[in-house]
Length: 160
Image (cartoon, rainbow, N blue to C red):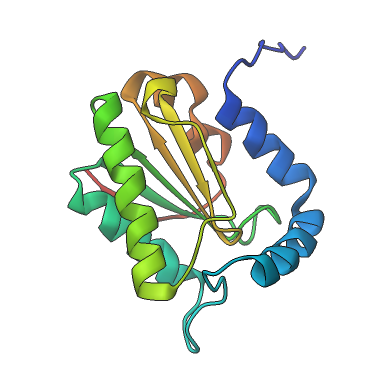
């Protein structure tokens, strides 16, 4: 028998919506490109794994803890990669999030499709379609246990 838990976290709800509407998201992304100053297409010759590794490096630059890079390509059509990391306090979550977004914008001219949550909520989700970055406080990370949920996905990188 399955147990259903009440979910009150806005980032989790956003994540589920992303799963349900990925095809629709591609259409929205096309519209966003025409509406945004920031170009959402990557440099030629770059791919999702490059962006994922850049996000890992940007998070590590702000002292993110327990950084994990999961390859979801064979287990899900939601996204290609998850970057999951933790920050000790809410201000660190905000700093990690800001740095990841700054690096992606400066290095690749990429703007996040969607950012959900902040340091105060304990979970920040940054959605780049092919790469989704989850930044947690340790308590919230343990509660949602994304690594357990996606345990079939190969771990490409684990940094303590």
